[in-house]
Image 1 (spheres, rainbow, N blue to C red):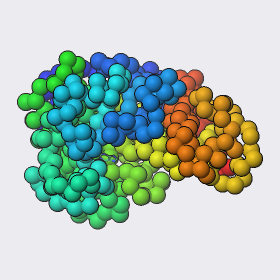
Image 2 (cartoon, protein in one colour):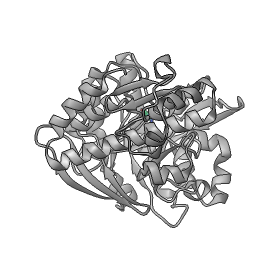
Image 3 (cartoon, helix red, strand yellow):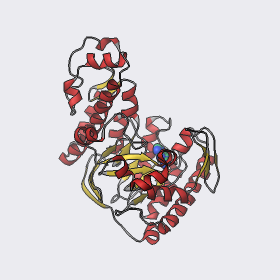
Image 4 (tube, protein in one colour):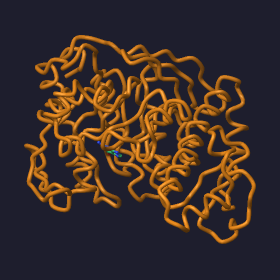
Length: 387
Ligand code: GUN
């Protein structure tokens, strides 16, 4: 079954602008009804209709991402789909007029719910908020994502853990493929909820087995969606295994469609995966680690809680692109963390997101300039340090 037959329309405009010669890195542009997305892109995670610790105004003006991510699992449980419908969709509810992608819950159901049963029909799970029971099926997850109203919506899949037994990974991958067909059939019957269009990305699974990854990538490519995602990685496997899987899958997924690697990763993981042909990323790392006092910089990572920063009055990050990098010192931010002030977490979050967006924009600039490989080699060495 191809998505073209099922949905009979294409809406995403994807233009490949440059392919690197020494690596598989690409620079491209996607256009949706909520504007342009220049790739490679990192999507800040706004799980519950908020990028934790950052005002939408700061997000736009300082960090300036073309797209952010929301989570079906969280939004369905709170504020609940009905409230989002009444608000006119997530964009209006959270006052964000640029692009949004929603994950399907295929990962959160497994990582957050302490009690879940996976069957062919769908997944029964217990809410991490109030202990109530719910069921996600490929069909209702498509309906929920229509109502949330993100520009890019994701297939309902099973994200396998690491390590994962071969037979389980194989059975799970086939179920994810069957669920994909159900998602597509149901989407065809579920009209857009608002006055703009949505596009749908299927997800490659297959754990850390090359033959399964190849099989899944062939299947997903055959669907003919406007973009494709890779899931089931960054779940505890060594980085080299992740890269090996990305490489195998990118060789099969079509070149003229965006490729999204879900839930990845460290700044080094991002550059290595860009080199393998990935265009889109998301991860909680810059926001979550910021709240724990970990700052990412072009010269390595900083634990701002460390005593060594107590009397270091130099700017947070002399190369940084956001106002916090120049207006606050390391000593001041360390003090805010020591005093457990909210402002500390906010400053660190703006810094880290600013850094991640700078990193992918620089990657794009170097791909377009033709020296991505040389730049990446230097950056990977530099960013591996602890300052
Ligand atoms: N986020 C990170 N990995 C995954 C995955 O495998 N599936 C989904 N749906 N989301 C993810």
